[in-house]
Length: 163
Image (cartoon, rainbow, N blue to C red; front, side):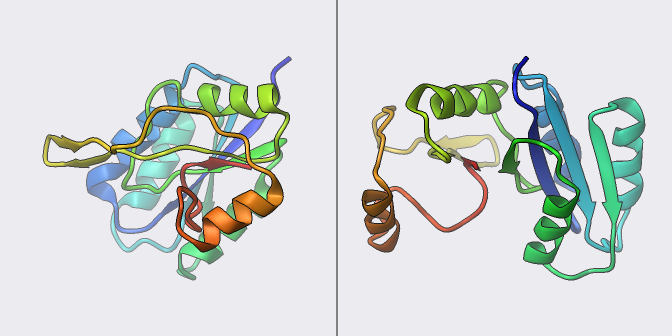
């Protein structure tokens, strides 16, 4: 059986984007997912939307909490997570249908603890392609730290990674 992967989505004032985000996660080719939507005290209808999604997909769990900010919302999701791996998706983003499967296969094939991918920026139906080659690169801990410190392909943001 495939490993359970927890996807944590902090939610705050994103009514306009939330449906596309959640749908992109639910439609993954990798199906063994636990999806945790963390309503971080959003003053709009996001909390109700999260509850609606949870009723339509048994993989979705919802946390409603007082606003504490992005890191606090992610940490609340981590506390509830039961997956072997964790991925973060921002609630105003969406992911390709094979995002989790692709990243998971790299983790397994390369026997690593973290998988990181590039992103694609989309503004009002205009896609800005990144100029990097689509390649898999395995780094030692030292190489990864150096790349992180020198901003060479690894950033400190939580999304785009499975850990």
